[in-house]
Image (cartoon, rainbow, N blue to C red; front, top):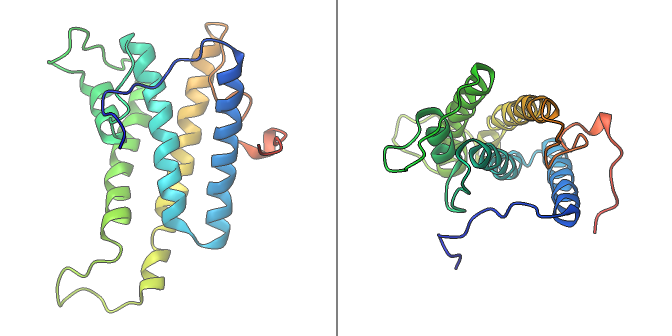
Length: 186
């Protein structure tokens, strides 16, 4: 059982940064493999983790505090878009480009919830009679949209950090396989 008070640790040196980019690259490559093999829900689940981590990084930067590990993508979007009346530092995302992508991610997270939590359910007699396998294919679009949103957020994050002479934990091109050599997996 994880401690709900754990926070996402900030890298203090190059070791964690290297480990993060290798993990991000491997995770994103797995998402693409899942899309190629029809494992759309797995792709959505890994994308949720990647998007959540990148939102947590942005949260940390804006609020100058580490988010709790237990914060979901929806929680992070809400905190970034609306701040918090419970916190002494309710800073919110003010950049309109980031806000637009975070709003799209927030909408995606609701679709993701349906994909993850309702795929095996039949809610009523009027639900369409489709096979479970056919039902899974509708979530391909959820995964593809998640890839697009992750990449949009990463492009903004990379540009914002470059303006401060910094790079994100996804550097170089963890979410853009065509632009970057892929490391051997550990």
